Length: 437
Image 1 (spheres, rainbow, N blue to C red):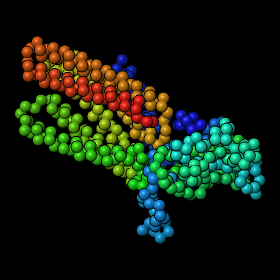
Image 2 (image 1 turned 90 degrees about the vertical axis):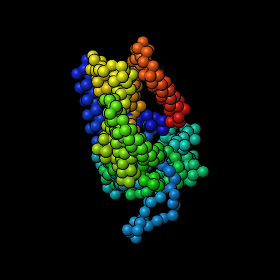
Image 3 (image 1 turned 45 degrees about the vertical axis):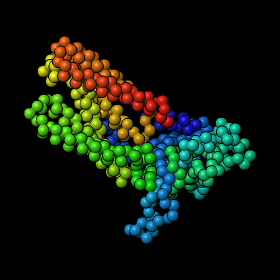
Image 4 (image 1 turned 30 degrees about the horizontal axis):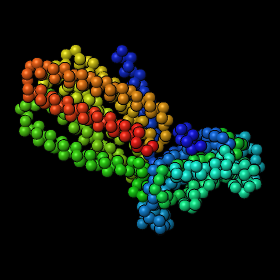
């Protein structure tokens, strides 16, 4: 059942214009994406078996560091969640169809039930009737008569090793009210793991019910999801590494400024872009961790810096492989082809990076992401083939001219590039095959 739920949740002028439209569309789609604050804007429930569900979010959460109730220093009554891992309903409202509401009397109580269910991924088999040898998700009269569950509720088998989990929070419609609002509630997380939130109901009369509101997911050290928390440290260290690299390059640049060629300026630009990219990512993750939201502007700048750096890096390798500045003074008729390949690669990479970095909270389907991954993979393959083909021709020219110094330099360059490609392929294989999903 939960696997099904997860699956539910992501010539020249002729080429450039459609790709530009795709990027603009992605920008508009993601302009309102929040980070660890999941917002619901009058969204519908989906049917599955004998139940209806809405995926409220999923995050990796660390166990709380503090378990004692603490009081915020700025208030004598307001609790502080420093050092705690929580999921907070802030608030959430359910809106049922008018026809359903009118079918009840205003004095009736509990005229409809919606359940919020929080579970750790290892407890996914505890939702539904599999433990009762039933395919049902909701408790029916037969199961209720066996005292296995309460009729009209989602079947949950609690984990004996983690009392009270999976956690169920009930919200009832009252009388003929169209809306039912959840109490403002905070659930503390005391076990590290991957957590899922589903809103579910079993009453077919509630078909057409919508959900609005938001939930806030927070780790002990901030709002960064567990799978993203190590990246803030990584980007901080990479910023320092690029700073050291940039300083070393600048000193060499000044020392040999009389021998500088155009390629050295391009290398300087790539290093500067890498430094800016890492710094902006660190700032973006730090802000994300503090506020729980990801401003679109900061993320877009970071993604753009990274896409430009990747594009220029590949173009730089390509023109060096062609012998530009070493064997040949210009690229001649190849310039337009090189520029076109670089432009297409930038657009494809920008689109993919936007999906990857803005798709952490709203779960995009694998098919949507695959459509963006394949063009980038194909273009990378084109770069690799073109680079090694050009290197082969350049080595032949140097060998014919018997320029031994440059020939040795290009051989070392070829070997280093081949090792880098093999390591990249090995890493891709590790991510696809060995790394757990």
